[in-house]
Length: 120
Image 1 (cartoon, rainbow, N blue to C red):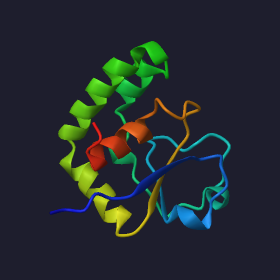
Image 2 (cartoon, helix red, strand yellow):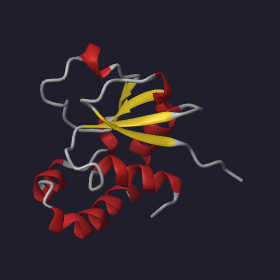
Image 3 (tube, helix red, strand yellow):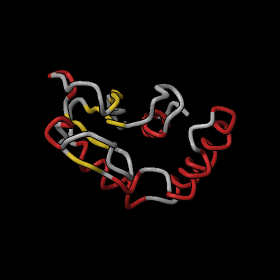
Image 4 (cartoon, helix red, strand yellow):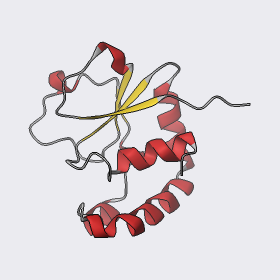
C-alpha cells in the first residue's frame, strides 16, 4: 500500500517556515516581484502547471473553476513525465507546494495536491 504524501500549500509571497519541508514552486511562470532568495525554494517544477492555453483561458475567473478542474485533471492524466519529476522533487517527508494565485481555494496548486493525494 502506497502512503499518500503530506502536501501543504503556501502562497509564494508568504514567508518560508521551518514546517514547510521541501518547498516546490508548481507554477509555469515565476511569481511577479519575488526574489529567488525570498522564495527559498528547493525545486521549481514548471511542467506540472496548467498549460499556457489553459492558464490564459481560466484567468482565475471563479465561474470557470469547475471546467478548469476538468481540463487540468485531463492534462495531469497525460503528463506522466511532469508528475514523475514532481514526485522525485518531493522526496520524502513534508512538502509545500508554492503558488502565486491570490485565490487560496481555487488554484492549480490546490487541485494538484488533491490529485496527488486522491482527494479528487
